[in-house]
Image 1 (cartoon, rainbow, N blue to C red):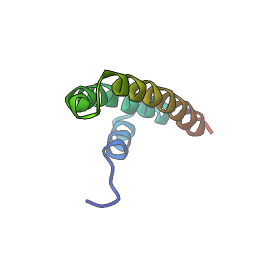
Image 2: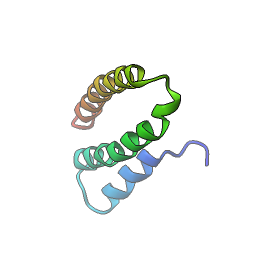
Image 3: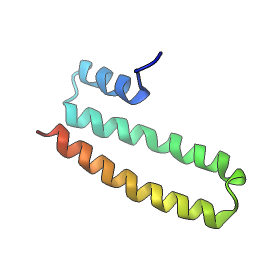
Length: 77
């Protein structure tokens, strides 16, 4: 369905279940970690070798961490 994301559904459901918006956002991000790691492992063979996979993981971690921090800060406003 266009315009609906898994993250948005997760956050909305957790808020509806009584979690504070910041806690729902944190939980949603935490739930995405295993999925992202597994996807990286599954696709690592087609990415061009361990060096490319390591560089991609590090870049993704830095950007993800910054994005999560920004989203949490915005949710506290």
